[in-house]
Image 1 (cartoon, one colour):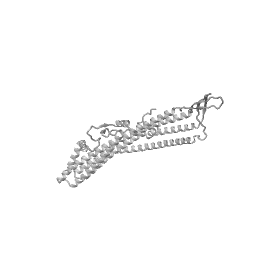
Image 2: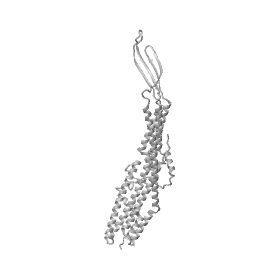
Image 3: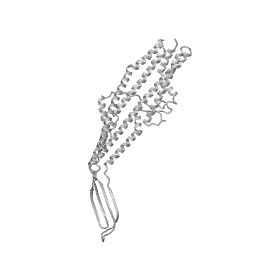
Image 4: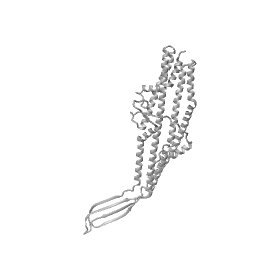
Length: 435
């Protein structure tokens, strides 16, 4: 029997002692092609989750757009509170008297027209403007919550991809060390060439997996940079790991919290109030709004002062079309509100199920799946050492263990992603609205 079992155990022991050192050496070897989050000549910028959220909120064009829309709605409110401007009229012209002995000369007329508004029209217009401002405030908060959700998901995804890449590098390093030792054994005739062919296939597969993991890491880094606005040349490195999650409230409590706080639902409700106020305004405009008129007429012989009122006559246009349009807008706003409520309830149910499944997977991994796979690797190594199994069975056991570790990493990310979505739906990070 050749000496491969002892060499394999030495390799495993060495990896246990120097796994981090080997991973760092491999990273330096690929430094020219790896993203800055892994290695860079300059010291990387350490980035926590709170720092990433602060950077995103400070430089996000999406939030600036929402703020501009809010300012526009406030300007509409200012316009709604203003009174209509008066109209001034000036007429000049020659005056020729046709009465014998009359005086001819220049004549003129000066008039002022002041439109008057009823309190019902002004109140309805002000209510519509206030509902518009509230809707834009809620829209800004919804944009902020969506941005924070995307940043959290991108941050946790980068943590996942980084851990995945390090795991693949460790696997590739282990297989390359084993391959070098098997090559020595094959060259001395202590092992068949078939063992070298098998380990070559394993090394090639590990290299491809490392390259794929590096690509996913780069994509995750680019996504986070785009969200937080960090320049491309500046290297960054996320710090921390997946946080420990606490117990969730009861589903009914989460549902009630979502229906009472979520900005999308509150914005849709504000849209209903705005549409109803516009309907009241259109109905109030059916009554003709008067205008106060004052006129001074002067010619070479006399001066006249006249005061009066003017009303439009609703003979041809009684605002049937405007009222019908406003009624349709109210129905549309109610439908949007109901649709938003249905979408949010469905999204919460899906997020809770996703969190439950991911939590069960994490518990299964913590409860023994990983330990069983590690024990299977130890049994396979021991059987190989005593000549009871072949080397390919050891590789199969190690492959199963690597797959379980990757699945465990994926399950933890899914659990975090589901919790982030639940926090978004219940508006956990929502700020108090400032009028």
